Image 1 (tube, rainbow, N blue to C red):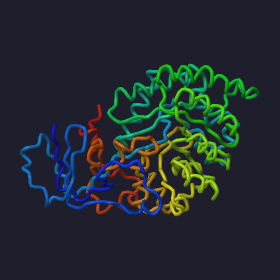
Image 2 (image 1 turned 30 degrees about the vertical axis):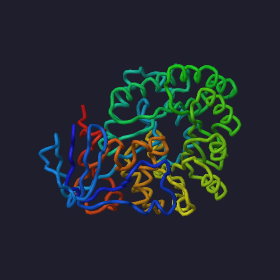
Image 3 (image 1 turned 60 degrees about the horizontal axis):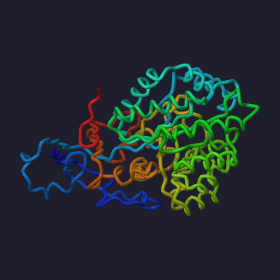
Image 4 (image 1 turned 135 degrees about the horizontal axis):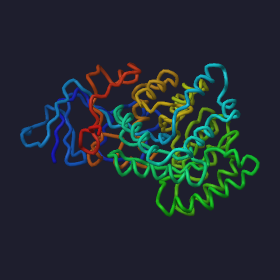
Length: 417
């Protein structure tokens, strides 16, 4: 199957060959793009790209021809942090926030993660799958073509396994690339409040072996933060996961300088995520590591908490990632276009920097950089064909509206079933 996309107004985030190095610091503002361009696709992968003035073939030799006149083509978004498998919604807590309750106060009253856990424990697998599939279709329609999905709303053996099996079904039934993360250590369940060690033992000695045996998780995650898991507990869980070859990703520094960044680096975490609270020493430590710093501006917007200092992080030479954290309690949206807008408006990122953060750097945060995140020969043809927009900057500027005309996944225009 040979496909030609021709006459694109512009194609963006270009590479001549896949790189194992993320886009860092000042490089994030340097967007490689090409105007009046074409892309040639063979089966699932990009074969080549170039300027239309250098295209000398007959379009009749292609099985499919797409006229992209007036449109811009971007790599599909790579959302490296989501929780889209959940039961029900939490708009009652939304009203509580309007009435002045904090995230911590809602959690103390039985809301938050524990509320979602109780609902999920009472929901069967098929119902969870159908709801998550609907959310996945929604984020695809906004341009996401690679996504990480975490468990963590089960908090019992049965429900954590149930969540991971739902993610496995999503992997099997959708063309997008999905990474699965075991987040049994998301919160301490109510019944273990006075015996934290017993729950951690359950995670390490019951959940983790079966997750590994069934191949249900690509990664493990721990919510290492004030009021959740300590650095010592996090290390214990990560050391146990390492015995099964499961690499870590960390929830770190949402609520305090928790030590989550340091423990993530120590254990060679693929990414440390949130970082609303981060100091200069932690930024320097990240710069000297291979761990990807991931900001979740949708959470800051929704909870009205400080935004991760992404401008400072980039100016310090870091390869910043932006992800949605799509979940029912602190960011009920998986719209990566809006994530870009928030990062530009509140984080001071240039549109080019935000685009790198949601494409190639997001791919690095899921170890997908060899096949995702840029328009590059040999990579999957995972592409966003935009509506007619005047510039790349229009993508985060014109917030709240979907600028996607078509999404291509592995060489095929995605059609919702």
